[in-house]
Length: 421
Length: 67
Image (cartoon, rainbow over all chains, first blue to last red; front, side, top):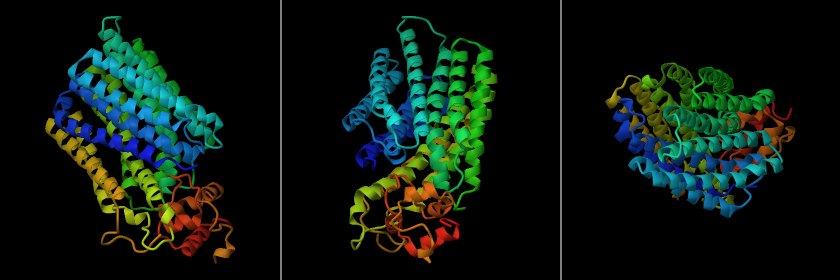
């Protein structure tokens, strides 16, 4: 079973559109964020542009790739996948506009449309796990991840109901629980499942995640995340800290293996994909102490909070999806355009369709931007934060240029590897 | 040399990766992965990546794959 190129490429194309607008918005709003105004409506809109627009759309696109490629089974209905993409895009636009303008009606409408999109994607993919001929454990991470997404949306719905005056909720506690459910419960849960298969493959490390760790990792992360969220929502510090302890232990366990794959990598020199995956691991490693200090400092430690959020959103998750795009898209694009012409004169090889220097430059720009942005948020430097965001924008722009070149490739440029497929 | 190894050109990349974990570093060095499901043969993957098949088979054998 081969993944659908138009479906995966459309998701990733839409995601890159969101990523570019998000990085441009971050460059504009970085000084606001550095001042600690993380509840500014513009910052809330920007955060959802990244999470719902870029990350969630990318992850869904990659799921349509890995279900057939790794679980050996496709989605239930291709048309539903396209409808879900349309709803997700429209819902994100409505919600982001509603948050930016502070319009409750738009926020509610966006939330409702997004709920429909997430439900359709879950209906289309999750039941397939039980029929999958292999890799069902990966399907479990994805199912748990979608449960996290659903919980995060319910908490967001509770906040919207509060804004309408239907009931009263603790604002900061609910926002913190919503963030944790979305980033740890959905993004990190799904990413742990995908990364524990993809990182050994991309780094060329012969030892996969041990079966026992693979079995308990999603359960530990899920338990920890839900416990943290409950503790934050009901202002129960003991519960919050118990959840933090379990979440940190699960993350440390994943990181121990992930750094082992990095150390055992087959090619010492990094390419764009492996460089970005390394940036993602550095960001996740940094996010652990940042998050613990942020939890101790609470709302007063806004520098720690924003640095933690940025290390997770743009660092761990952002660099991960960018890195994976450098492997998924070229392979799929080459198969779509050239696989049927193998053996014919002039058919390019896959490496000939790539631009390694452009890809590596984009990865370095993104990593340098993140390395500038996160410390700048910690020390409340608006200029540094803007510089970092600008470099990240350049990194995402460079990645888009790299991928567009691949789509429009006609013949190898100077210096490209010789030969035909 | 290639006839002495149990990895054969017509075997799929997925089958090789699953059966011989030691093949991972060799395949990764050439950018060959399972992103499209690994359903193609090693021979096809070698052509796609512009890698000499005989050299790839020798490299796999050198890594202890199929012994």
